[in-house]
Structure formats: C-alpha cells, structure tokens
Length: 88
Image (cartoon, rainbow, N blue to C red; front, side, top):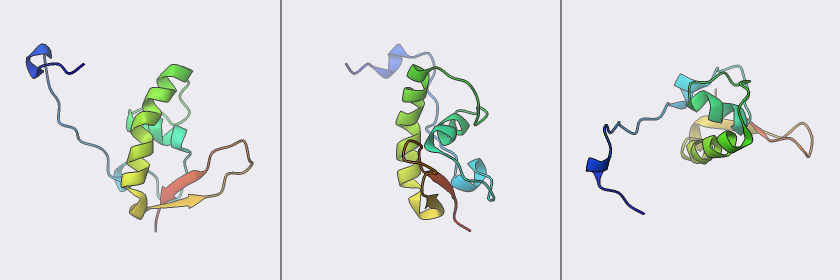
C-alpha cells in the first residue's frame, strides 16, 4: 500500500552506478556479483538467499538499462549464469 512521504524520516536520491564506475574493464561478472557490487559488497560476499533475491530485483533492471555499455558471455555450463562486462 502506498505511504505518504512524511512517514519516512529521510529520503535519498535514487542514484545508481554507471557501468564504468562499478565494473573492472578486464573482468566479467555474473548478475549475482553485480547485485552485490551495486550494494557496495564484495562480489564474493556471503549473503542469504532471501537477501540475494532482493538484490537481484535491483541488478536485473540495472543490466537491462545499461545493456549498451555491456558485453555478455555464455555461461560456462547450463546450470550457471551468464557473465557481463564492460564493452571496450
């Protein structure tokens, strides 16, 4: 249910990283690793499944919005995700 802005103590700008600010130009990342990076976490950080699902809600649209600046690679196997990196 929607809430009035007054219900919140503080509101923040909705700023997201640009791909070149987030990703190393020589590295490919899974969407799970990108999700962690978007939250300021190490790409290998251990997080719970529920937290990871929430982070993916942010990461998937970020990848789609920034697709023109990214390259994608096939997953190493059928049970692994694809990998994304900076277009160079």
